[in-house]
Amino acid sequence: MSALLDRPLLKKKEEFKLPHNAKDQDVRVLLEATALCPRYVGARIHGVKVGASPRWLVQRLENVGLRSINNIVDITNYIMFDFGQPMHAFDFANIKGGEVIVRTAHENEKFIALDEKEHVLKHQELVIADQGGAIALAGVIGGLHSGVSDTTKNIFLESAFFSAQGVRRTAREYGIDTDSAYRFSRGVNPEETALALQKAVELILENAGGELVGSVKDVYPMPVEREPIMIQVEQVENRLGYAVDKNDFQKVLERLGCVFDGDKVRVPSHRWDLSIKEDLIEEYARLHGYENIGERLPVLQSEPTNHDKKYVNTRRVAGMLSQQGLTQAVNYAFLNKKWQASVLGDVSVQEIAVKNPISEDFAVMRMSLLPSLLQNVSFNLRHGNEQGEIFEISPVEWCEEDDFKESVKLAFALWGEVQSIWAPSVAPVYRLKSYVENLMASEFPGEKFSWDAPEKMHPLFHPKQTVSLVFRGKKHGVLGAIHPQVAKEYKLKKDVAFAEFSFEGLFGDKKVVRYKDIPIYPGVEKDVAFVMDNSITVETVKKEIAKAGGELLKQIQIVDRYVGAPLKPQERSISFRLFFQTNDRTLADDEVGAIFNKIIDAAQQKLPITLR
Image (tube, rainbow, N blue to C red; front, top):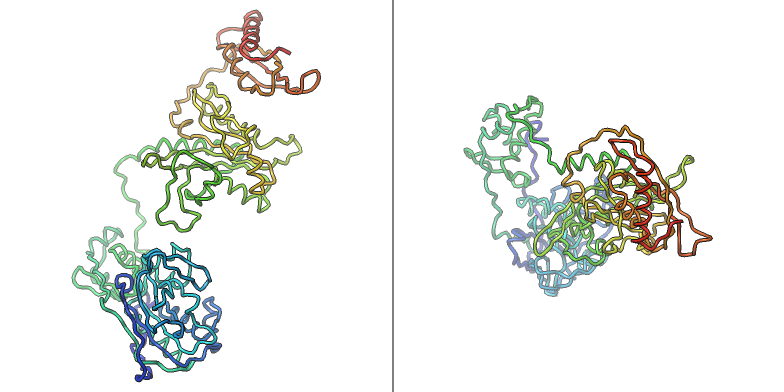
């Protein structure tokens, strides 16, 4: 606000006169890890009375969303919001040996935090320790047995400048989210570390009594010095697109506390967000006014590049599926390691682990889209959405022989029944099969595809209701109903079907569609029914019919299925409708009859089936 209104900034009081008892021995502070903690300030106060905070302090904390705990803790929180400096108060009686040591953790050192969780440290974390071990994770959280309680009489007050990278790494490693870690991770002002502690001591003496023992300990062996930022006005003009007056640029940044020395700019210690010249340009643009940035579009010197083929294919397929009524899902590319392993089972490739994950739920790259879609289905059912149809087109990643691999997948998830008074209910697996067949027919008109038994059964799918999509002689993925055991484990009370295909395998080499004239000659339909054992798949019969039918056989449809007497219990009758047609003549009955008889003979010779 000072910079925006060009008004003098009212600075904090530079020094507080604190009464203290110089007769007692000062606390000993040993700063061993200066790289992770350049400055450590502490004070020892005896004879405090821990109790309720005054009304003004409670009110101010409530105004920023904090609840009152006790007068000591409330003052440290108040200082954190006033100065931006997190602080921590220790019960001095629980500091063994009366010595505070700032060091890195020992290998496999155990630490119990305030939330009563035990952590095993790994030698890279910065800790506050006494002669007995770690009593706080520096800048993150205090220890269970070293904090201030109702019986505390003597305290040791800490104010420090911890490395932002170190605090951020520790907080993420152990999944601890505190106000202190939030502020240290973004940088605090090292020049106000002692000033903040002095103000806290003054408030404690006023509101909790006691006296300061010795003097305030300020260990600052290596003062923090930030490198100046090199910047020229021409660089500002190039970024903003308009002429910039050098004196105006300097005056605006000086209002922020910056100091100029030619082309060198030293930023104030409290502005850790200003580290490169682009930061200074952004601050100038903000204070000078965004309205000064022109709206003229740059001149296009060349033609736009063509869209990437993968992008075009993805948009086209996604649009086609959306037209069929499916909703496109967008999920994170990261997964929980255990969740992915439980859904995919044993895989022959290695997952890719994230070196610095935000949490355990984003620890590995996903090797399949199915775990994410299973989460989507479970979430929807738990929240009352009992019917849905979604798809996702996204890349998956894995590691194979120390080499990173990536492939784009197309996956589906359907659950529940479509409620309609106009049409009978259809199981999700059959609806999903029709969607895929419609997509294939639309993308590859005139080309044949089929369904076959999968080479390897996926643990997510039902062993008797799963098929592989065969196209151009290759299997490109699986489609099927969910395994009953998986549905029971995740409490999915509706029928669910999944599918996952290789997007690149299906659409990566898509040929240009060449349209043909609509035939002007009529076609001929003939029906045939075969009795077969339940172990014989319909796709197997369709393949034999297609081979024997040749070029004149254009379409094979399943029109009826019959079970019961006089058939055996393990048998069923399947009726096929065959459509014959050619573009150059009307087919004669004798010609079609000969092909039809050839189909019947070939099917019965190649397969253990009989004509009904």
